[in-house]
Length: 490
Image 1 (cartoon, helix red, strand yellow):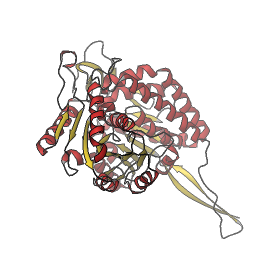
Image 2 (tube, one colour):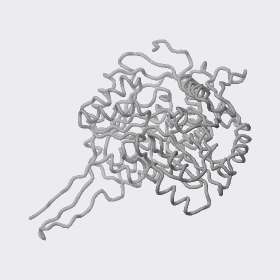
Image 3 (cartoon, helix red, strand yellow):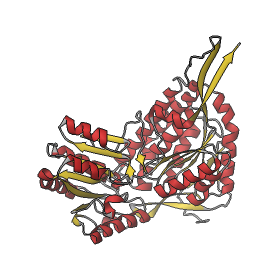
Image 4 (tube, rainbow, N blue to C red):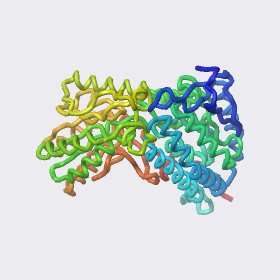
């Protein structure tokens, strides 16, 4: 933690009750560029429980008035903030790239997605929030209404610092909740720039709040706080389970989106060029730092060598570098810790006997020596019970596994604790249907990469990948509201 900051580097405050406030501890933490660890993107507050308590109190105070607004009126606020973000798109995207490393084009696409999500949920303010139910009493009226939870705590990760907070906050807000956001420390400057957009859009005081700081302090504080009625979390399985246990202990509603070990299956009749393109895009874009990233690649024997050769030829061409450079295809790992985690898994793969086909090293040439860069990495001779085929690496590592049949591919693809996303490449409709019916994943895609889902579609995993609720689309109403049943008689 720091009390002194470098000149000409901006310090970003917490956003509480419509005002920018320093931490009560008067401490800040630097956010550094993973492409150049010596570049400080900004300073953010190292907040205390006292700061969180202030934010929760503000959200609780604002909730009643916000709830009483019509859905259409709340939607107008979301439209306004979408327009502000759109006007600042390049600035927010550049900050994202400098804070967590993904390429500028990816950051622009993510920020534009945030705009689209806000506009989508703005429209949700005009949709129905209940149903009329027949009563056995002919003189009575019985119906249901969706009501907000109250104050919602949002704990968001660093890998999608615009899209994920927005796809949690937008439905929470449109359904009448107020929000306290705890962004990942690594991308808190990006989060502060989002809060500036909510401020410019004229959001009522206290409806949206942000407190930055350590997960052990602010994240745990959200879990424990008696005035936070719902918690929506995206992150690791270890932390997610702690969130769920803590929320359950005090009766708060919770929603968890966690890890994945996502397979792609390539069958003999596949368009191999399309399969290679989807495997590389799904597995290596954003430096593999997506919960839906392709990790395991099951390839039928007859096309295995051809697929492998095509894949390696493309991987060798990928330009790794600073995400702000136009010719960069893959940026750095988001932090030194993440780089070390990826390198440790690569070492485990070697020790387990997997064959390293390409990559596996930290890149340290002169241009990028101060960044957290690793080569895109491909293994073969991998068994599905190896650590690198079972545990989430969250980095640009692909493992190739040879299979004889689709039945063998499906059995091994399902043989992990995760069940987030999966894809298959085939032209055979029966194989497609077998995959759709038998794959244990919340998102299955045919002839498309594992990563990515349209914003109007429900998103979430099976098994250990989620708490079995769904985010995005109209499914979001299930978490962010409670059902009230009304019975009226003369």
